[in-house]
Length: 376
Picture 1: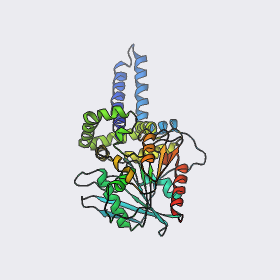
Picture 2: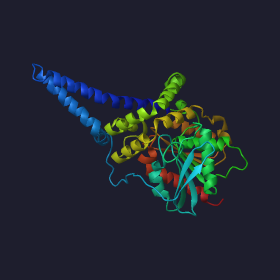
Picture 3: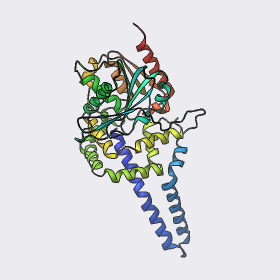
Picture 4: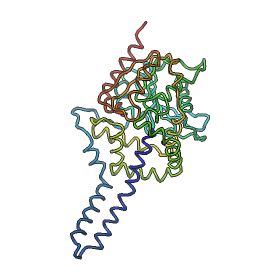
């Protein structure tokens, strides 16, 4: 999301500053020790040591301070499968697809958001794999999918990749479940792909997503809209140019806990566990900054506002009352303009409520899926 560009850049700049500040304090200590300013020198060395500890161990302190203990909570972790495909696309990219669950069950295709990968669906995989066929794809440049040679990260490109996954997997009447940018890819497929041969879609679940350029439905949207062209767009190109360096700083931000602070403020509501916060921050850090920036540029050109009334697929919209990146009023707008849509709002929840409020989200999705399966 565009706001993340600014937030993580601030975290990255702080990550760069910490070693320089620590070095400066060390030099001050070395300069003033054994002088009449020895008390000042002592404070400097204590500050340098504190900063060094923050640089090396900060994430452990930050995630503990910013999280809650939830008794009996299942903590997320990485998972894998030996059932996967690599779909070659005309633009040179390779889309990683993984399969879980019951092979003859109702297929559900999961599309994650920006700065994420398949692993973000940990709770959904565990909840649904017993009774359903789960098909999970990594978006271009994220997870195990590769980047397109033409550098196309538009929603049209991602919708085409989603269609390719549906056709390649042989999924019959699948339910599409998208989070954030993944929901935008699904909406683009439903709204823009009018091909008569397009595979039939049984239903769609849109979680924490929007129908238009997200700068218009984010917090501080007036400011963000105003600075999109003069600030955000050039910043995206700068991040693309400096991506390897910024990625190094991003990992420094993960280690010292700066990224955890931004992740907590922008994507969680405050009831997340320490492990959930760290898990989400790690997944975000794994995405190359250039991919994040190109994804934002693609979202700047995204809009399906006019096509919403033409979407006839039954749709469940999952919102969160404290979502900073896709405000709840965007979900309310989609509910009003998609003819066969229903809305569930998770409370308290933010943009990563699929982790923080996973039980409520999964139960709402299952009710929706079961309703779709009932004979008319």
